[in-house]
Structures are given as structure tokens and as C-alpha cells.
Length: 157
Image (cartoon, rainbow, N blue to C red):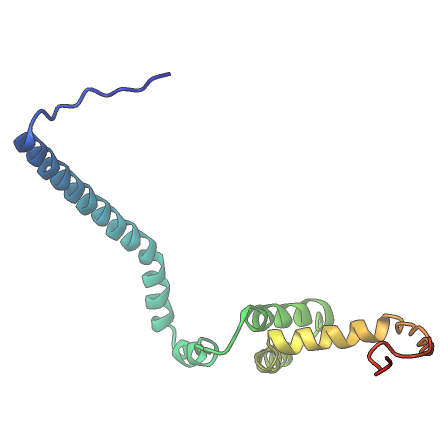
């Protein structure tokens, strides 16, 4: 199947005009996409702004936000998931009948403990458990060196 396209360009001037037209078209499309991107970001940011204004309206919410929303640059995905998951698991399964104060204290302590754990600590613990569970490798008895007579690099003539 042969694909051929009839070109509108017949000489150098028409080529320059076509290049200018395509550059203008590309600029117009880039401006349109940039406007759409900014509009999309505004629509996405609206619920976040609403929640922030609601949190600022509640007294004492700034203190709680400061305790829990500190950005820690050294955290990896394990630490972040443990910060969220550990209090949920503890409160859901182990502290079902506990009071509000006890749950709040356990939540704070478990989040602090989860901050200490990171990917390296967890992988080290898993490796230690795996080494404990795996049977030790059996070592083969070393073969004694067999003497075949005169060594090949000796000075025999």
C-alpha cells in the first residue's frame, strides 16, 4: 500500500509561510492546553481549599495538624503506611472496648513508633526471621588434596 500526500508547498516562500502557520497553530494549541490545565488544577484544588478553611475554623485543629502533618524527608513508603495502618489495626482489633483517651494515646504512640521504622529496618527484621526459619545449609566435606607425584611447575629436566 503506497501512501502519498500531495504537498501544498510549491516553492521556498510557500514553505516559509507553512512553517510560520504551523508554529502559530502550535502556539495556539499550547496556550489552550495550558489554560485547560490551570482550570483543571483550580477545580481539583477547590475541595482542598474548602477542607483547609473548615479545619482553620475548628479551634485547636491547627495544633493537631502541626502534630500529624509534619513533613519528614527521611520517610519512605513503609513508614508512611505504618503511620496510618498501625493505629487503625490496633484500635480495630486490640482496643475494641477501650475508651477515647486510651485510643488516642495508643494512636500517638504507635505513630511515633512507626516513624522509627523504615524500609531498611523492616527488611533487616524479615531477613533475620527468614534466616531463623530456613534450615542451615549442609556443608560438603572438603576433599583432601590428592598427590599425583611431581608437580607440573617443578624444575625437572
